[in-house]
Image: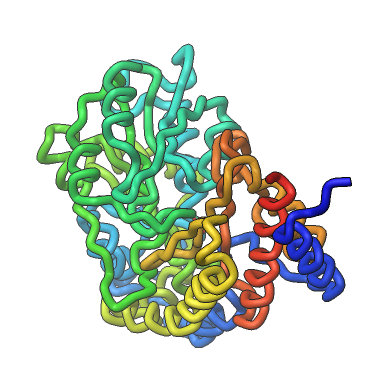
Length: 414
Ligand code: PLP
């Protein structure tokens, strides 16, 4: 009979003790915690009996398709979209991304030869690891997803440039340029410049610039991202970019304000189509946001309060992983300067098993593979950690348990 390795023996013992604890913890989704939502409680009392916007609009009534100027002004600088080219819409940027894809399917984009629905094949480049809802949205409309490796400075631009230049079916790319989901990568100026300027075989190629974490810093230094709309315009590709953002993780995730911005031609095209599905957005909610956040400094001050609540959770993840796995060579993980996620990389073929073991111990993790199109991480190595929602003590317990699962999964495999 072969005897067990000391590592495996210890890992099995630790895992049995972990299961004994009967934990019920969830670090699956990047949601703000109730305490974070409480930061905007005062906003819910607004606008009170005030219902007139700065331009005299009665916010209670129909109209104002592009959204209130005061709420657009709040985010025009952060999102790097000129005020006249920024739309404030409903409560979600994901729905704006969805609508932009659907409208591109059904109506010819500026510069397009055909509607996307009339193309024999549509593909998008997707940097991986990436955001599962971008993938699900694309798959829903039969858009083929072509993975592109992420680097420390954004997607591998040699790959992006080659593919975009040679294949006219490639109509777009998903980008989370700042504190990406899940790696926390911020795109370098060089990456942004190359995306804006690269030749594309499709005349109607679009960059879906999902700037979901634009003001979500975890350190004193906010990373500055190059201005993609301006760079695209300067390169003769003015219509290449759709910028998205929202206040979901600034105020209230279920009832924030979503934004889309682009070139004048794209905005005219989009508003013409959005006007067929709504007479105007929820301006009372937009007014409440403008009154509560006031100006850019107001947004920054509010985000510092979020940081006070969530930075300790990110620090705890790093501290516990360093203590439990730091010298083991069994895992690496990201230390993001902002955003909502930490990416944990385990040895090849182990991620699914780690997630399965964690589930068995009452720790819910995002399914392994969710960071890749089709839910398939070919190397089975990436696990997304979302530490914002649980209380600090719960995050600590979940990550300590996760480290046990990593040790056991790797030892069993060896
Ligand atoms: N984009 C990214 C990259 C996200 O991580 C998320 C939420 O986790 C969203 C968009 C969702 O945005 P919204 O709430 O504005 O629909």
